[in-house]
Length: 223
Image (tube, rainbow, N blue to C red):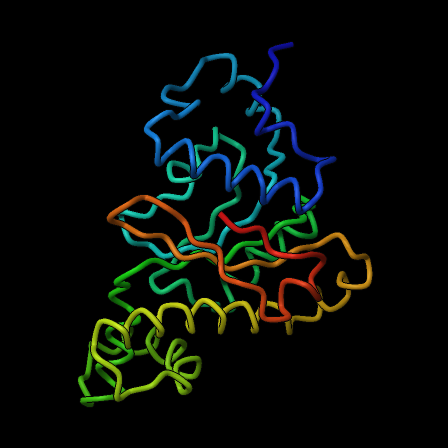
């Protein structure tokens, strides 16, 4: 039987090991040395039998932020849910619950990115009352509650950068509060971390611990 590459043989690795794979993969991506530049036929045959991703990632829909590429992960390595502003809707929660219950991923990552347009739109609504189309506003309404501690008097660039971080942490707090996550916390194996992707450099900055990561099973890895 064809063998899968290391990043798809995943069921036994810990959350910390999974996070280190993401860190290492992003470093390869930034160096321009990806391990998965093409798709091999035997890999596709292997994946047709099922999936065993080592991490679940909630990311933004921005076309410049594809998790599989920026973490240099092969097909089948990541279970990715993407929505503008990396917001946590009921549908997104269902997808993440599926990853935890049926795919048994131990690592969950909320991945935001610098200059996020959805977060900027939320700031524009808060600061200037700028309105959007109805369904866009529904999405923005999910972001606004997480931005109330952002200094709205700060310079615009600083304000947006802090709001992007705050939005990632807001999604993390909502994930942490779900019944399924609360049920898994005593196991000590699950890990929930946040990261920010820098579009200009290609690097992912993992957020320093704020209690969410440690309660979810370990200390956050840093670049």
